[in-house]
Length: 405
Ligand SMILES: [Mn+2]
Image (cartoon, rainbow, N blue to C red; front, side, top):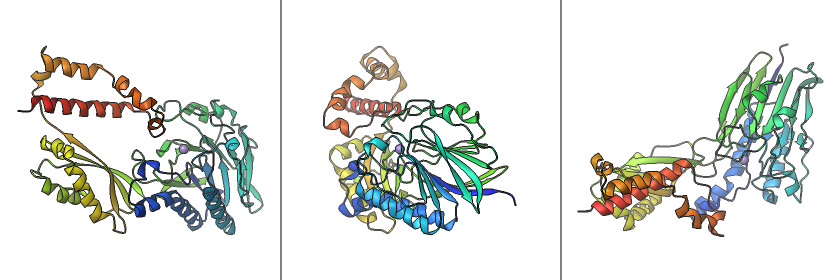
């Protein structure tokens, strides 16, 4: 009989993430947000049972931080116990968020769970019907950072075994958005004959290569406004010649960003309906990050008069109690005013001001904030895109004021 292997690949569960930035949402919503990583975990387990997989791979960052919450550990153990009843194995490694030496109270998992406990790459052999079917390779972070090029340590052992699967929590070298841990280049992963690379660390899901599959499943539940859309895991069926991958969404709540053009709204009274009309039914509750766009500068006035906030409150009152609720947790405004190009080209004041905006970095102006003891705990480094956005908004504000009347 042709050999085949069926498994689920997930990573970056970040169980019991605190979602600090969302603590000002209404209590009933925040309670669901705090529970979301656990619900996604339960769905992962149900998916594994339904698909009757041979095992689950969890490639690092199971917990959100080194002081693993007791709740997270116990909920995870329960999940594993349920899988044990269905004879589904779990292979797991720890990443930069849940590195081993950070954990003072390690929990004991049931016998179906195999943990890579060392920073050296090692392997487990998976057997089915008394046959050795797969070797699974991996390592865990003992400390917060692993900067070695771990990919080079992966060597296929015992080629008589049909399938070889490598688990690696780290970043591809071109990635600039995440901390570069255990960096690798695509070629490093192709030197040995692995059938599947189960990656973790990058929260955006991506299939880097299809033969052999080299896969980031992303996290199973979005945790901030940058982690939008469906989140989940891959169900993988490996045959001797090829692989089938299907994505399974698991998120309990989706982060969704939406831009709504309200140029038609001449009065603030029209805005509420306009926002509600722009909403579409979704499969899961959504935390909305909304940008209101208009051709008219009145939008900025409504914003500074707090009218936009009031409208958002009204919209939230309408939508937050539905089963698949929506809640706007962030709103920004943008006026798309067309200025005369000539204005920016000349040597006069406007031209100079505009060039100043283009040339100067905003870093010196925000550095006080980023060095503030309290503030910096909550701030991520600004991406290039965000910097441009902030600049553009400041520029608009200034020009709107200057050109009034
Ligand atoms: Mn992570």
